[in-house]
Every structure is written in C-alpha cells, then in structure tokens.
Length: 171
Image 1 (cartoon, rainbow, N blue to C red):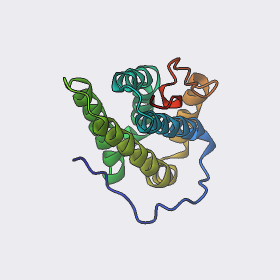
Image 2 (image 1 turned 180 degrees about the horizontal axis):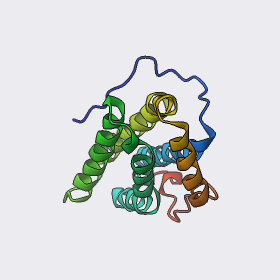
Image 3 (image 1 turned 60 degrees about the vertical axis):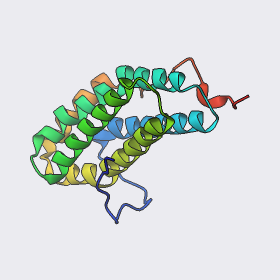
Image 4 (image 1 turned 180 degrees about the vertical axis):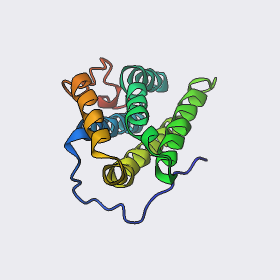
C-alpha cells in the first residue's frame, strides 16, 4: 500500500495563492471533483468499466498535462525534499493508474485508493509544496510559469465527460 507523507499542519485554512500559479490551483479543484465523481460512482454501484474509462479520459485530457506542467515549470526549478516528494507522488499515481488499468479483474478498492491518493497529493501540493515554491523560487521563475500558464490556460479545464456514471443509483 502506497502511503503519502502528510503534514499535521495541513488544516482547512483558506490559501492565498500566487497569481502566477492560480491556474494550477484551479486544476486542483477539478482534480478533487474528479476524485469525488469516482468515489460517488462506486458508492452508487456504477459498473467499474465505466469508472475505468473515465479515469483514462481524465488522464489523457487533463491530468497528464497537469503533472508535466507542474514538474517542468516549478518542481524542476528546485531540488529539495518537497519537490522530490511532489515528483515521486506523480510517479506513484501514474504507476498505480497503469497497474490498475492492466489488471484483468477490476476491483473497486483500486479505484477508491487511487482517488484517495490523488486527494492527498493535491492537498500536499496546495498546503505544503506550493507555498514552499512561492517562498523559494525566484520571482522571475514564477512570472515565467505564470506567462506560460496564462497562455495555455485561457479558461479552466472543463470536464465534459459524457457518461455521468456518478449520477445513477444502482438498480
């Protein structure tokens, strides 16, 4: 079982984010909603093949690019324990998703575990890693990241997946 490190100071306080990386925080909101949909669909008894298709859709249309942007724009600019943790968690999430996708027998616990790990990862980034990066990275790096993100994120990601498996109760 993969376990992400948590910080006891990770309370539910409002977070003031640098304007330069707000698009990444908006992506995190989308990621939390993605996890909610997985958990809700499983709770309501959705066919697990539908959940799997949604996870793969979200990966291909959003999460893969999000991980790359975080790493290329921010994490690779520092080499310390927190940025290494961020990259390691990305790798663990990708490996978990690939391992689950390649299983012959689909297991709802695999999807619930994946969703929980992604939630923990998002909370770590928002509450620990991003504040650390905002404090440690040179302003020019944050400005450059912001310019890229503002050019490539003209509007927040819209999850327009057509199969709303999370809305239907099991018959």
